[in-house]
Length: 514
Ligand code: GLN
Image (cartoon, rainbow, N blue to C red; front, side, top):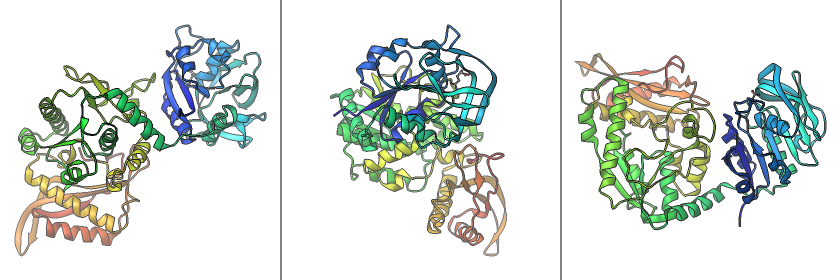
């Protein structure tokens, strides 16, 4: 049976995927389409409701993104958000103008009238705004249901046509009751029953993947990270041994990591797929032997990684599809999330690599956020240790060894890192600290061990707490734990004679070292 669904029509707002995510959180399936999608196609999907997103343009500018006003006659409930609300008003005969005062940030909004949209919402509620224009005159048939100091029509409705508009952004968490408002829209206005859960995503994806792939072959670059692992598990459930996973071990992984990945996805694991493990460490060490500068190291690692993958894939029997673990934040950052502006380019987003033999790209997690990806992974039976594993950069230990990389240094940092992680977990701190690892400073200093002079390396221990990785604080670690870890490292790891704890936050430092 088809799930009921809400469609989001994207006019280029920065938060459009958040809207979809919030609707899914309410238990209703949701998809996003560009404003260029034809009305016929939209109606053919039988949406229970439609949401118009925000957008960067001004509706009175003739070149701006728009939609046919026919959509308002279809009898489908529509919620316009910011630009979406302005557009609805404009198309239905209201007037949108440059606002005398632009509003940005958290703004107090007063609810003026009872409305299904505001059921259970406080009379005064903090909403997040970001606009230059506003609805100066409502379209015929509408009435105001909320205002702010500078915005007489902060929310409008025409309940007979089930058309709603809000000047603020309910999808952003700064809008304190925004999720409740979206839930009100989907349940009280659109009459949804809430028939969607994450397991449906798994079922739906499996069906779609089977349809797309048919009897063809798919190849996936498996890194052992959460995203590519979840893609592997999903594809394995969908197409089994038509999937080949190439796992490139660049020799810069954490201690035992390559074996752990093999244990899950290799022949002894629980997934039906072809698993190829390529031990390319010697090649990476050779290519890296003169590199000292972080960006240079990253470039070498990235380039070799692609080469090894391509060489291995070239040996396969003509796979038609390339699968990737692209997730939604990668898509947004690359500016490919529908219509929103580019923020920064991303290595694995943007379509098929040039000169490729592949016929198509498969990105089943493209619309999910990290925590949704984790839920999917758990549904698919991936081990929790993998799902909740520590974030690990693509270049791996290559950027946790400051300066020149050698196989000996890799081993040394692997050992120290394993001790640090083991002790933090044993102390029960694993869930309180967002990221922790050991790095090898490029510093050697004099020490004394067994009455003999040493001239050895210093290990830096890192542990940070953070909400979003944009900023971070050094975690407060009990002294006793730090001293135990220090003792173990200097005793168990040869050529380390000092251990530092990094007390710096981000900014001014970063979480990683290079
Ligand atoms: N560009 C419109 C404005 O400035 C809409 C902004 C938005 O959707 N966030 O009012």
